[in-house]
Length: 356
Image 1 (cartoon, rainbow, N blue to C red):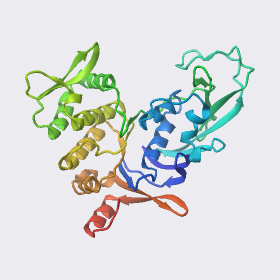
Image 2 (cartoon, rainbow, N blue to C red):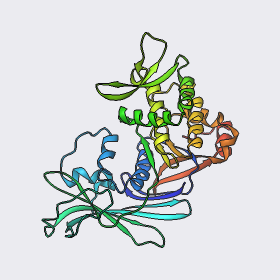
Image 3 (cartoon, one colour):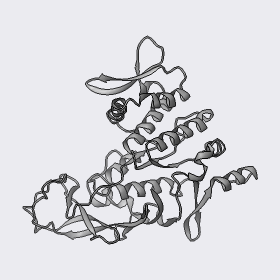
Image 4 (cartoon, helix red, strand yellow):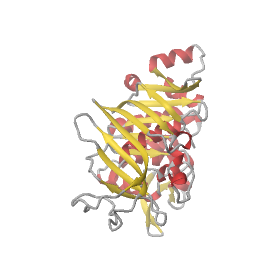
């Protein structure tokens, strides 16, 4: 479980220290204070071995196409678009404090060495190893271990490619549900199929029925050759769940994200998106039930005072000790994090204090 994090020079976060996370953490604060950036920083730490580590974050922001230049590809994730800075993420993960630094190398030369056997890495043409290129250098360090590196190389024709010098072991499984981009339908269908194999469909069905009582059953039916989750709502035929409303579709994606992150981390941007206020506490508690069932940590942002209050007041007592609310505030010294446990947040609501 992630216990704390320090973020430096990532997006709008020049310096931010979050001293404490719970197993279930909500993150609030004004617009443009860095809530989404905090989630993206955590995902980048877990996604550090992917050649799509930066591009997928542009997609979450709704930027489908990016100019094939370093300043367009990489500068948006650096504070003030300044590629001369170094992104540094320090994560207290369980009993280990791990560090990831990301910086631009303008004269990187690819070593002329073979691709390691038995590892899934992107193959890189080493015929031009002597030619310098621009690259993002990822350096991961863990106590007592040799630092490990990965480079994203810039190719003006083909775009970024990946070269791994030292292979890092297993990384905590992590799911990210953005406020704009949804996971591909096939991804949710594949996760649903994994649940079906373990005879756990009833768990998901029960959660979704709290949102839509007319729901009778879920099943996978191909659409144009692709598997898609369908819902039986008592109509003349089953329909793709994306046609059953934003709330149903988002809740299914959320639950499938928890399935994919079994034993790991689930990051949710703007949890309440597409959900009616009357269902907030039920949906939040269903999420906590599913996360506990699959041993996941959940960190979610919210803009809604109504959702935050309902999530706090309706929280079952067995989750109270594991809950934290994190509010980000912009101050003259920079963005700071204030952490509330369940008892403190409940007292703030009772006193009518503003906690968003």
